[in-house]
View (tube, helix red, strand yellow):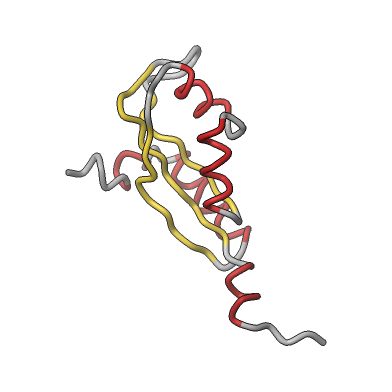
Length: 105
């Protein structure tokens, strides 16, 4: 039996995050988009992938159009199930804009 240390607990956290694009844009077959919502176990690594063009197609498209983005919100969850549930709730209910602190200014 392995005892979990504080570091082990940190490794088991998942993060739901919202990226805010500098300006809204139209993507084929979709309404105007200004946020990307995702979840990850390694936020810094995932943001690096988005910056380098190896992340999601949506962020890759924004990057190719010269549209900048910022990390607007990051929430930690103790399990992948909880993080995924929160991510889907935000996406399905169109809550990206409501939860984005940049949009609320």
